[in-house]
Amino acid sequence: MAALGEVAARWAPGLWRRAVRAAAWLGGRRFASGGTQSPPTFGLLLDIDGVLVRGHQVIPAAQEAFRRLLDPQGQLRVPVVFVTNAGNISQCSKAEELSAQLGFQVQPDQVILSHSPMKLFSQHHDRRMLVSGQGPLVENARALGFKHLVTVDELRAAFPVLDMVDLQRRPKTTPLPRSDFPAIEGVLLLGEPVRWETSLQLITDVLLSDGNPGTGLATAPYPHLPVLASNTDLLWMAEAKMPRFGHGTFLLCLEAIYRKLTGRELCYSGLTGKPSLLTYRYAEGLLAQQAARRGWAAPIRSLYAVGDNPMSDVYGANLFHQHLQTQQEGAARSCASILVCTGVYGPQAPSPTVPAPGSEGSPFHGHRDFGFRPELLEAAHVVSDLHEAVQLVLCKEGWAL
Image (tube, rainbow, N blue to C red; front, side):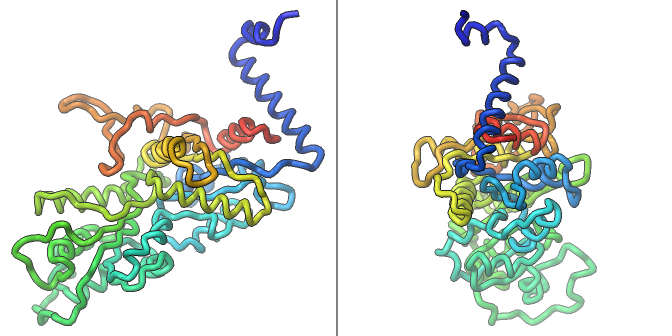
């Protein structure tokens, strides 16, 4: 009788893959049928825009995926955290929004916004910070631990002559100079603002004046005040056929302006959101807390990160996977990147490269501080949508589909 390996070698590769999947499925069915499904040793990190939703529309494949992930009581069978680079909403509101869209209860501590890891930057929490973005800015910043906040609108009201681009908003009279405005001690960038020209001007004023925008300095201080930023996505996907500008585009403008004016590079005291390692370590901690709350004693060893943006989702997951191979702070030992084709990425898109001057090629869309390592843009798995991604994960883990 021929050995199993010899028989398999004569099969078509596609038949062999289907046979392996069938065996895994049957094994999972037998294991689950006795009602003694073992605790999960893996968890899911799911992007939102382009994976679960496009704008306000839920992607049908995402709904189908969660039908496989939920038990008969409507509880998740495995730990899941939703990791988004959005930041213009509160954590509680985002959880409520996801609950309504997906049809089951999402807890606030299952949601990681781009700025959530800034809770760890306690050394800056007592500084007087200029905060930029939109949505519940002050509420979000206070939830992160920042105590003394000034919004761009408040700064503009205190110094109306600083905002001069929009003719309709220029002051009609020259206000008296102020000397009672406390100095700003840092800049907190939580997402793209609405009026870019105003935010770019006033943030630059704060940096060039060492936090005293009502005055002028002969020489811009360097190093400048601490700058913390979340979400470096150049682009993101909504209902439009083409991607939209993200906060990374705003940061690119700010960096270019600062460099042009000073001849120096804008430096960040912290960058959060994907592909930051800090964001993935933070997500791993929330998965472990979720498993403990559900009474799943087995450590979460394998992470699967599903996203639609090669530069943030894939790059970040692969970077974290490499980090896990050398650092053993937590329980996780691997982080597999899974790229879906329902958002920024499409199978027809060229691979990101750094083209030589004068040559044609797809430009690098990542933030300069994360560098460019082409191998980190290659997803471990490329699938059509979240449903196929979940099928892949459950099959690899030997769970019932």
